[in-house]
Image (cartoon, rainbow, N blue to C red; front, side):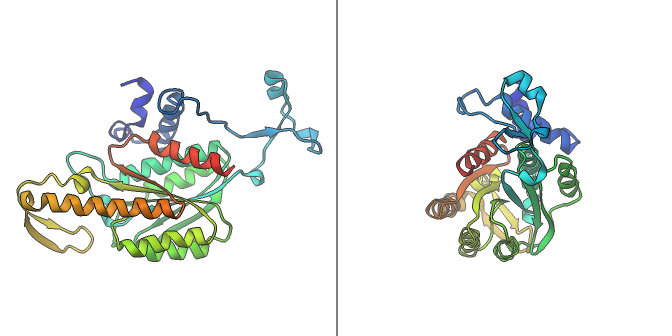
Length: 298
């Protein structure tokens, strides 16, 4: 594995104990690999400055940047934020699932949230965070100062997946609560009533927000590699069902693929960016999706 690639590997970063270090290494690993396929020709411009325009206060020209580039740039301030974003993170009990030595879906989602937040703040985008289960657990409004990263990371570190999930109800509530339109990033396994979740995602579009949906799954949830008799227990309701894994495997996989296909199609039709990820997916997939979306909005 190339050195920068290891920082994009969920299993590697899970060995690190400091979430801020993980966020920084994930983003640095991503940037180091941007010139490689499949991102050749894509670049990141960290916008702590903007180009000088007639009428700008010359007191704020950065002369060090001028000395390096022979161009005039103005230092930006917090109120000149480029984009307002919210990450809406599912912290319900189902997100605590893992199989085969993988990290949990919630751990993966937290690493992804940390990396996205770090990258957004480097871009001088304002980032907010909402944690939820069957209700809104925490609502942190967007800000664009770099020191805000510690607020977000502290919240991630102090939460564990618990309780049932009511994704649709929570998303509707958030859509009404957010008054200024921006970019909404939903990170969830989306294992809920599908029609209701899709309706809630459309609510954000009705409010003229832009959306990216990251559906995070454990590989076993999609592949169902259980070829033996077993008792399966719902992690949120504790309901149990006994089944012969080998005999239901084919039907399960077909039904689950249809479930995923519906989300993908509905998002496509409604102008929502959708990315299916499992807990082994390299983080650069999500970071590139965000930057690509951002590039279309700015």
